[in-house]
Image (cartoon, rainbow, N blue to C red; front, side, top):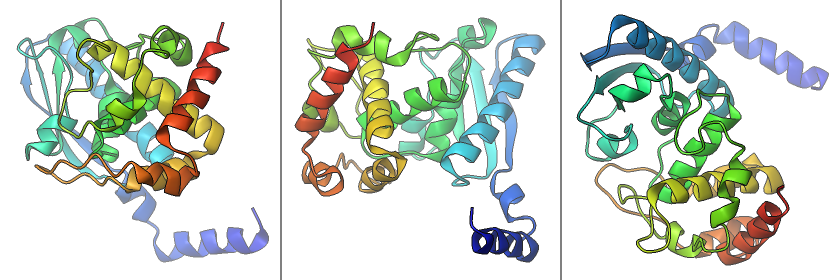
Length: 247
């Protein structure tokens, strides 16, 4: 960091002393809870850590209260789809994930901080973030290295078709990729984009499909060429070559 940059940072902190702290303040409130106190407390602490990690990594794009449900009636953790339906600042976890210490806390917190209208990119970023930032072993890779977990599905994964899926459509391709496989592919592909081409370009791409409740907009296929100078199919070929090298 240059001297001028350090000086600017100091001046910003003096002028706006509470901005950085206030921007990342997330409060956790439980609504419906069907688990004992110990797993509930574990989940609360993990969510607080998740908020801090995601905010530091992605940026202070969210602050305020979060409402958490933990019940036996849901099969998968959710925050992106409820938000699309108009129920924002809300996460629901299956009770078993709290009981087994396998809740995808950073994954769901990423949806809170960085929702997106492209379901493939939204889930891919959340899977990558949960693994990258050290969340509890959770769906879809449960702690297994992400590229290695996706390797078996890379050749059959139709990235172009996945990129056409808008939020809130389910991330899967009937007859080709089941939900778990599609999430692994999404996480691995987003990780590849960030590793090989940088976070700045990924953010540019991500910004082309802003999240708007009750609207479906997976994005124009041309946006890949505009951001990366390559089509999504060409990038997918690069990704497959990279994943194929994983032992």
